[in-house]
Length: 214
Image (cartoon, rainbow, N blue to C red; front, top):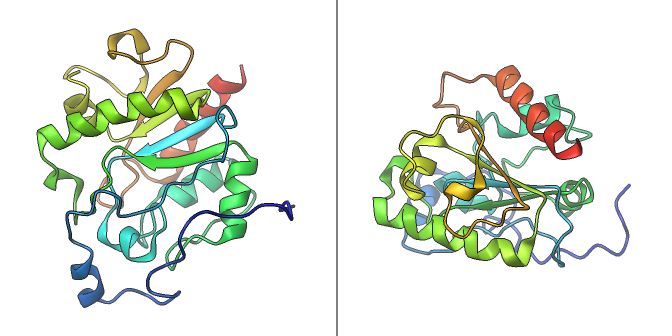
């Protein structure tokens, strides 16, 4: 049940709820460092898990909704893991009700880098390092119980940890990372990542969530 007092601070879809066209998408390939609004609570310490994407895709930026491109496995895997009560459809924008639903479950979403690109591999090494350092700085304000970063290649680059494997990490290896905030690296849920299907990702989300509840 959505709390009547919930008021979203996120902007609605720039396209007003319609599907982006090819021309629309091209307009969002800019240097804007804040191409999409986060899904975050108004006060620190209210999140069980902060999910960190690498950066917004053009479709995501066009509708101002995380993991919005059709075919992305994020929302189906989150639902199959039991972390949402219904399958969120963010392809035309994230509704206020769905935003409130996520936050009421203690789930927030942000990105390592705010600039939108067609693919995450278009980001530069320094861009990832700057985004990684900025995330560490933001943790003092957000104070989640755990962070799950979705994308191992970008994590390795951003945090200078070339040998990192998927799974729970040792926070002491990350300069400035609070020792009371658990750190996980999970697979990129993009449809381009053929190695992890919805069921695989759902299993991983359940493992991460289970470790938080322990």
